[in-house]
Image: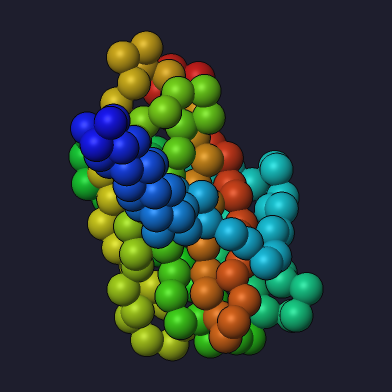
Length: 156
């Protein structure tokens, strides 16, 4: 009888541990957004920097330091902001049709509303890949997300 109770208690503790770890990791894996801004779908990050205007009047520009955007080669990603003061800027790179793992560098402040960091995108075995680069900005108590889409490989 005591052995069964001990096994049940251990099982309950393991379940509680999984719930606590999942809760603590959820902001990393599934960040919450207060504002989601859709950029102009005609803007092609493979060819140019893309800019959006926030509802509050601020502006955000995303640009890739190397074009076309390379796979398996480090390159710089840059975000320039104006009209507000972000406290944190990240860019989350995610495969649209294929999970390519977590790739979310935090960009370093370079002064005057500019942020930059290095990123390396993995190569897809098919050679062609559709990506979403989501700029995540924390400003005050607000978290802003701006999801840009681009293609790499043979169907750029």
